[in-house]
Length: 576
Image (tube, rainbow, N blue to C red; front, side):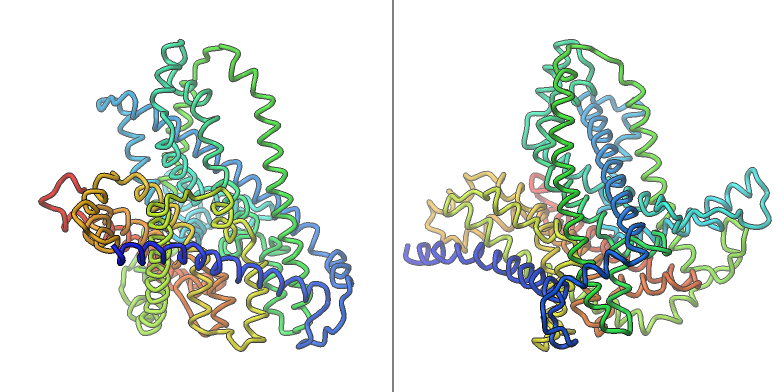
């Protein structure tokens, strides 16, 4: 009994420690970027507070277009991603309700569902590189068009990658964020009685899809508001995808800030800090605008929700099938293109397949790949273990102390995803240099942990909370301690969700670009940083090697997360 009391009394330390790990670096980062923006950075000669840096920022010739491009690409990408995710979720709910296995559209949606969700594990940079190979003027799509219809002997003079309006950037963001929002919607559907509401709508004469839009969506959307905000904040501040697919003259604001940071003239650090503050204000303003738009749309749609009109939405069903197939096909061809380029020796235009194949590209970069892959693996595994340890401790504290996860804590968990990375990571780097922690492995792991832990918590929280409470109660009745119940009852029963959460956390760590760049200080190279740096070059073979390996690592982790429980419980089908 004393052991049980002592163990339970230690559980509140986990939420406190988690909050400190989140609040301290974010607060320090914001503080560290605000002071240089106000002109105070003694190491670079800034000893007085003033607002001249912001005056210089507002007078910069590239700023107006960079701000417009940031807002346009970020908001449009979020609107499209959310619309497609809602459309696909409505159609998937309809198909799961009808359960007609012979229907071709039903089987198509089953393929879309099984294919889109694993795309979450693919890093943004890898998908962007593959998409660039696919839609470039000499890319795979143009090659097939030339082979089948056009007969072009030279690539057309199209600007399909890094176009001035950021359309390729928007497409790349939609390609990655739609599966994430779809997964969040499907997870939220488990918290409400979606099928019952659809049946109620059917009894009133509404179709499945219209019932979903009128009865289910208004209840689901508040549950996914934070993920939508995270997608909006990420789309406004993304760097790696913008470097690959976004315009360059001028670029988005986040890329412009990165250029100022990398400038040999250290005085540009003041301008970069002011730009980071501006990016934070733009993000906060966009979130407020989005929230106001939600309220306005809901007020305007009140009459539509209750007007009793039964419309025909077959066209919507066809649109969902088309958009889902387009997203899945584009993602598959993008990753396949990376693999083909990594194995090609000669692939001249307009051939649709490499003229000569070789493994020389992998052999030539094998020594550098080993070191880079090991660093990626090391950081991802260590970060995932620490995040799992903290998340399990927080969830155990919820259950043993009957403390529910508050809305304030949920917002705090999403805080690193809602604040632009360039804002507080730049501040952390400035403070780390003063504390002589810049470029340390500890700071690198800490910076990755800020983004890995939220995804692991969101993935593991629902399975952990929904575990049948009778199992731990039986252990208590038999005199088992909380630790014994955890290791001998809960962890075995939740092995699959634990491993899936760890795989998603590993994928998030692999995808981190700015945290590795800022915290690593150039001393640690991961597959993501190398792939993005090689993207500026012209050798597609090298880009294919690093991009494909970057995408392969998270997939291997996800496959292991699904295969290990099947092997471990091969004689216990109820645990799968």
